[in-house]
Length: 96
Length: 258
Image (tube, helix red, strand yellow):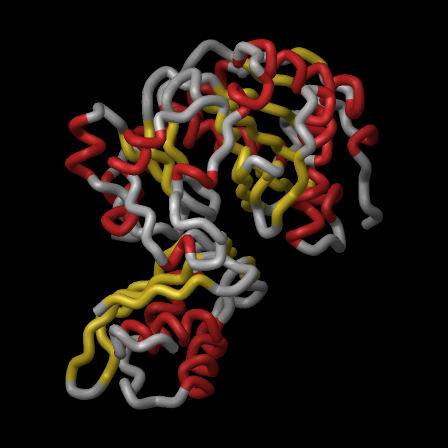
């Protein structure tokens, strides 16, 4: 499943994922945003893997924030924008 | 630490004969590390391309961004750079690409937005002298009334900032759209449905040969910030060549975000 979200005033945030047994699996974040350090990308993927597909937005954003390396900087992307892309991947055809 | 200014530094210029896309990727890392380590003075590097390439951003999905079959047909190499941002479509002679390797002290306490504008202030001045009224379009574009001229990207290492920019001099928009997958979502807040129309290259705006535009840009940098002619050192080239073998040329790196 695939979801894209152009963060207003930001960059394109893309999520590819699957759902197994009601949980997010194989989550992959990509896009033309700026993120440092590099290790933040796999950390975000790992934070989302295993989350319940029916978790609310706040829970998913908190899961991301909890796993970010210290001193992570984001430009053109935010935890909320990532969650919106996850929503769109889970519900293709709807606009989140 | 207080913020340093352009004139506090002894700027060096590297402008060599055309080099392969993978070597350009590696030189950005090697020279950023040299400036960070204090082995090299802050440097402006003007790129010359030996062959065509699509340069994707650090976090872009290879599959989502590039039509691999079309790239093969057009003999276009796909490489991944160390900074974030979007894909660039490069043909020799069609772009003006440069890198600035600056001490982090120059952007001390600045927002990202401010640091992008600072690093390209000389380019806006140079474009003005060429008769183009251009401005910074946050987050990372240089644009004019006619459309986008350039895209910038930054990445930071321990003590240094890499700011690099690709400007469109001329563009084969049909080929670009053949190779790059540009989705509708990406264009959703750009106010136009056509990706090709979003770019307004320097050739049509200036009527000048590319080499002349480059010469004028370098003259503006030299006048505003000072610039001494330098060359790539053997050790720097050797390090970059090693990085091509170990990192940038591996499928592991190019497909790191598959």
